[in-house]
Image: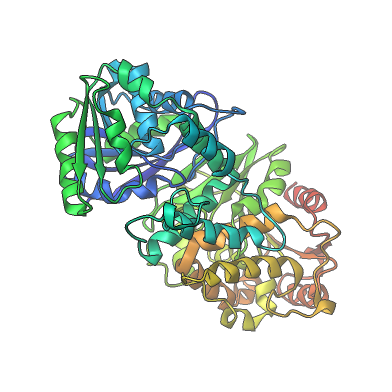
Length: 550
């Protein structure tokens, strides 16, 4: 099977969109359903990639795409994003495949710019009547906001399970029960992961699809429209509502057999293929000129997420485990006023699907980070390593200036044995375990030593958003992240620090229960003059880092 390549492009309005691209041949654009990401399209792309180049976009607000900067975006606004990508990458005219919400986006794109679209292939097309639409808008899309008590985590698992039990998901009862399914546990978990990536932004595209007048574009469209729906799709009965609307619209009913589904979609794409012949690499190369501050860097272990703040001299930031680069957003924003703060996610964290399970040692991890640093051209930049990432930073070649912040793992030998099991379970306990790992990390030091007198200094404002970002990173990284955490926790970085010959400062958090012990350890590695105490809060930490970088 051909390789899936990924990139992030910056749109004309300043937002970023993730693309996944696979295959070679005539181009086809694939648009996913809500609340998924382009990860939901990989199965279809795998069937098409031998003959076609599949361009899969995370709809704005989902996956790794930024939400649209609109208070109430409509389907027409999402369609404009697809058309901008087709235009700026010079792909058209192309067939556009869309599933559910993606189907509405696809047909609207054909209405807006028929010269860019050769045909539209709709895998489940919603046509709600007024009563159905009003009920969905009123009850189907409750806010999904982080909480400190984890109630949003329990709600999410229940929401996804109910989605595969009844339609609408919020009407549990015999009259709403689906006549098929549910899918396997790993599929439930994949939907949860995409839901976490979207967060509360999931409501925007969903609501736009519910408000959309699905009849009207089918009457106006001047390109072939193929509505092909499986009998185990909740929108199967909707297909008949489109019968006779236009001579351009064809209907195809399919059984639940996935082989029939794949062959039908392949036939429709083949019969309506455009004339642009490209492979995945060529499209990724074209997209390289559209990069912004949010990027995916290709490495030998898969894509690594990078975020860049500011335009000054570069400084590289590596986050702790558990955690992700979002936790460094506040520090990076302040450093970005005088530097170019480059936040590099550890391999397999903050990007989904996760990197292949080939990173067996800390040295392997360091090699991937060095690869990213090289591709970004910041080899001479100072490095700031937070927490467990000290193990990686001390293995990086040629680092002239290293600042280690809170290397707590170096005096917490038991932590590698306390990493929780987050293997998916039908009762959702894996999400609860991930949440409490993230929450206890903010309250105790180390997180598994849950004694109140050893609690961290957290002030009076434990952030639900920060906690949720860490929880999300744990879930996204999955088993790969657990393995990486255990490796980092077991690593003794003292020898590398002592042998460095200078250029290293260590910062410890005043008020943390391990502050004195960690300071003593740090003095033994780099000397008292290079050990500094500071509050864990963002502003004083950023100010100290700026001073050490000066």
